[in-house]
Length: 165
Image (cartoon, rainbow, N blue to C red; front, top):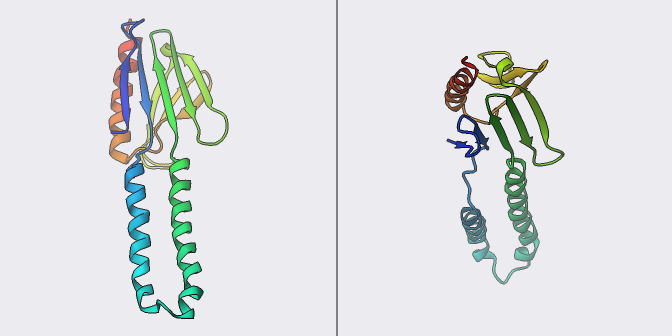
């Protein structure tokens, strides 16, 4: 799962949750894909070696390779999201580090925090939100549907344990 709980050593009850989108293509995989695409796109050009037509079609093939490279790099940059949720008996804080633009911050008293799941009506099914301090913020919208359900259950349990008298 693309999230991980970490225990804070300073406070035994405090925990930190790190969430990030799936990154299925490693740097090595990216290199192999671009190289494979380039070599496979060269196959039709072997019959054109020594002709003027080769030089007419070569820029279009290179443009296709550059377009795929740009699209994959852009997707990789757009997926550099990190959400950090810090839960302690007194405070709950969510920081979302966006790929472009400033980080977004939300903080509330843990006693008043409510974890909610919206099966419909959100941007994705089973949309998980945190409510508190007069605001409602999303968490883990980039996770799969099953991962959001599991996240909701874990968050609900942790908040319930922290707010128990």
